[in-house]
Length: 177
Image (cartoon, rainbow, N blue to C red):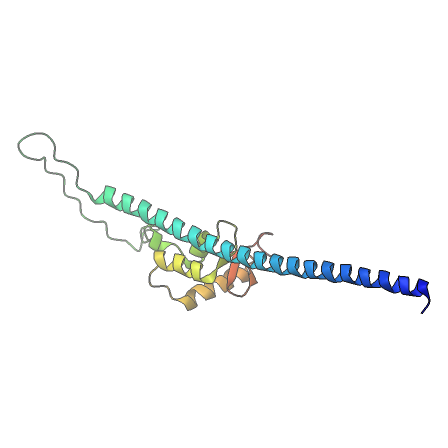
């Protein structure tokens, strides 16, 4: 073999070794990136679930404070006998008068669709399980099928998006027309 060709084959072997090392480094970095992306997605979902739980707990605290502050009897007035409060009869709804048959504005009176929007209010992607938990905390009689149907209606209206199976978020572009 000619010495020059032998020299070029030596250079080729060195370059091939360099390429092999660079390719391995590239593959290792690619695996690390994929692993980091998977951990990021898991952390994002965990954060959304934790946020939904935190919102629910805050609402429970607020509801409890409101309920306890309105149901506690007022302290008796000073004097020997407490002053007798005038009797109040509970108002019965009159179906012939507009507005008197409306449900009170409590957490239980919010629609499933409103509760779904509430669960997605952070703007993050939220798993259906966290949305279901949020809705069922506020409307205990709601089942998963009702919640999925309501989410489907909201998707049809363009209010929410489903980027992948079991994951929802608020629609970024607003409702479809």
